[in-house]
Length: 129
Image (cartoon, rainbow, N blue to C red; front, side, top):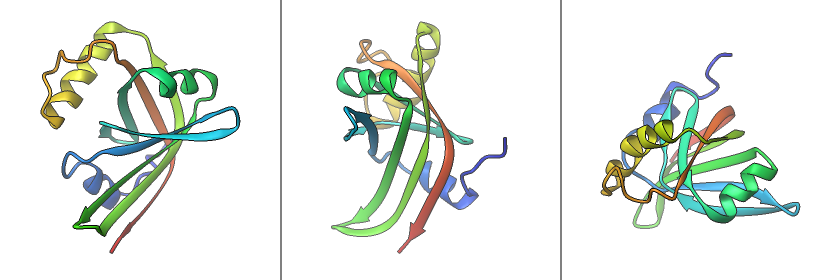
């Protein structure tokens, strides 16, 4: 399958360490929470626990939104929709933590309770302002 994320949106997603808003669904209601992420060629990785993880286990349809702003003025936004998979393999979790945590100023081995969730992006939209 071809990567549904335009090259310009990929550049935005990988340009700086911004928070993503990870939207899951519970009891037919949305649940959105900020997460650290890693993006690479149509796949997003997040490390998470709690309600977000439980929601993904129940319903793998998710959305991710990333925005960069300057003093409250939006500069760009990217929205990704896709299917999440919980990855139970500990080695894969450690490798993802080594990609994600240092990007946000944390040690690679911090937050070992987090579980890897991999999102295969099915559609994407973006806008620059």
